[in-house]
Image 1 (cartoon, one colour):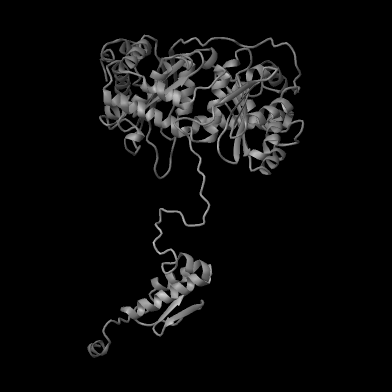
Image 2 (cartoon, rainbow, N blue to C red):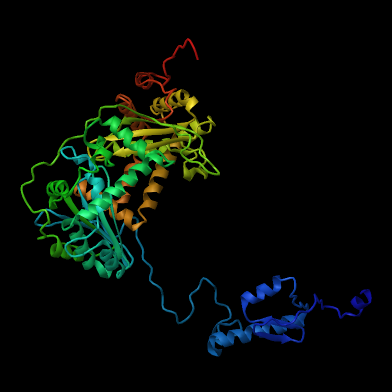
Length: 576
């Protein structure tokens, strides 16, 4: 072995030899075989049974350079190789400079604000048409209706839930939901319907060239649904399944949101149930649905919104399909429209429930008790809406397993003062729900059932500390984070569509993002203190779910929120 090493020529190193693989290879020199398939080359080089020969020195470099050059000639042609190779006419072209003879690219640019403002047209029948142009070959178009669960005071609760499930079913023009989906697929489109407490939204995303078909389909789905008996029966099954799932899912946030609204607005407007109660599932039929639709699905309560299309084109389609359209339930005098204003009442809603087996499996969630405490804020039409939004961002919060830096909210008050100091707290999150006549700022917290009283005391203390003066850095961070979240969300076309539709439906106009950013920038620490002081004067709304043995009474929670330090009154027990 040592003798063999001494006889070797300097500059050459052999690692062994392997027989050629079954794929085509090209011989570069007498000692090297190169596989013409890159994947195979990697396989050969990594396999222990197939060893390639490596050779050092100028001879090897020359052979490999010739092989690469000949490969480029074969791929691109001799003219292209000579023109752009290092040995051709342009040897020193920088990577940042354009190649000679290539057309100059034209890029879209927006200077400081949106290039296209939202355009709004009101048709003769009262229907509003709003559009926002946007680059791209796809558009999002939909109809928003001023109709939701808050308008069901004179009807069985759950109609909005049924309408959401029945949307885009069979219509006068389409025999089934499958026909609607096939029609949209021809234009690369999808459809969806969502209902909230105050708005019902039908939306379609498709190619711009299919706009005529999309508006025709929307008009048919909203104004000409068949509401067949078998479709209503299938909807009843879907609603029952969703209600069962709501009570079984590990994340209790939707159920707690429903409970906190019921406690804050007891029996009126936004306090009415958004999900259909079990006892009403069999009461809702075609006759009840037509009665409701006749009162609320009228042109004056609708907005046709579109993003990514020309305004004139959308108005033309609206005149063609929505101006003289006759709804299937007929036209008549509107009699039972609910114009009630939300009345904040405060109160408590409790559900005693065994949460020990909510999430079983290899990583089970421990048994937790969930508390949500809320206070009245303001409507989104008031000037104080922006300071409340900044306050909500300042409180922030999240789960105990969240990860990330300042952009993920790790410097918000509920992280610094609650989750970082109390390891037994599993969750502490702030939410802000705002409507056209009222609003609700609440904090959701989760902990072990044995520490519920201490958890409530911590949350009430955080509410009281909201009124303390906010630090300059803390306030600027919250404002920057809110503006960042706003702008990032508005990069999505469906989000722009919803923003345009909701603003035009509620106010008749739209504030552009740069206007909202200016309003956010103008919020001061005194504004935060003022709105917090006003909020703390209202009665609390409390929702509690789980083992509530250690839950303080509603009167004690109210007393803590009325005190200077947020502490609960002491409880003296003879036996523990």
